[in-house]
Amino acid sequence: MTSDNFIKNQITVAICTYNAAHYLASLLSELVSLACSIPFEILIVDNNSTDNTQKLVECFAKGSAIPIRYVMETEQGIAYARNRAIEESLSSRYLAFIDADELPTPGWLQSAIDTFQDNRVDCVGGKISIILPHRPKWLTDNLLPFYGEINHSDRAFQIADRSTPIWSGNIAYNTRIFQEGLRFDTRYNRKGKGVGGGEDAVMFRHFIEHDYYLLYEPNMEIRHLIPDEKIKRRYFLKLHFFAGKKAGLYEKPPSGKKIAGIPGYLFKQLVTKCLLVLRLYFTRSHAYMREAMNLAYHIGLMTGLYQSQSNNSHE
Image 1: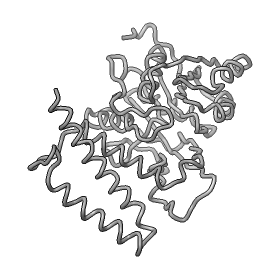
Image 2: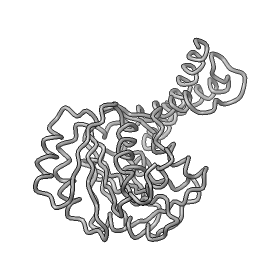
Image 3: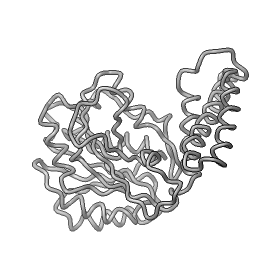
Image 4: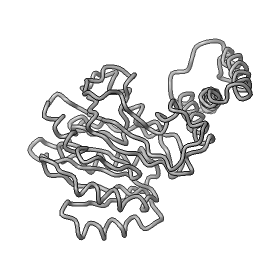
């Protein structure tokens, strides 16, 4: 725990990165030009990159009026990198996260600081706009939130339930919430260029369940740059499969008579979902992807439940 006497009235802007040097120059250029009414620093948490991330950051830091720190986190995965950022930022009053493949709008950082003028606020997040290099017909608007898109409103409001989430790609915290040891759950990890994760969803759920003071601030906006390799159906299917698998492994198992750790009714639902996806594929292609993603989650859930039962039987 860091004593109040040693907490600096500054905000640390943390970027957790893995082999994303091709994004970093633009992001760092945008960040150092931001206006902010309190001092801020930039923290790069390099999660074992094999590209020129370290050299790029060191060169950029030499000519920057804004302090830039570089640390290497050798435990692979985004949850470990975010936790390292927390550890490195405990002497700052505030901590903000932005991802390497994002760019802030000019008022991004100041909007966060303005929100924290209300000392009750524990956490604030804002809009995330999606920038696509191209858009196939199957990529409908209802799929964009799975790239992290957020646009709850054009007005600020207190978040009271899970219907209006804020994600760690655009979020800021009062670091007091981390002083007693709160960290991201590393079971919900994503390694390297893998998909999935979910550590921020678990953290958000913890905030709601324990009555943290959360705000949505639309002026705290970033632009998320989506690469070509994520504009594929299989990206969404893998994302949902792994989300379902982690739910099966780590969350409270559903009730009911089980076969190999899987409630019998899930097998019936599996057949129903498979038939629905097949029908939509041939009759309503614009609705097919959403149901295919639900099916992938269902298969992942059953896989996780089976593995959880298997793991318990071997203990």
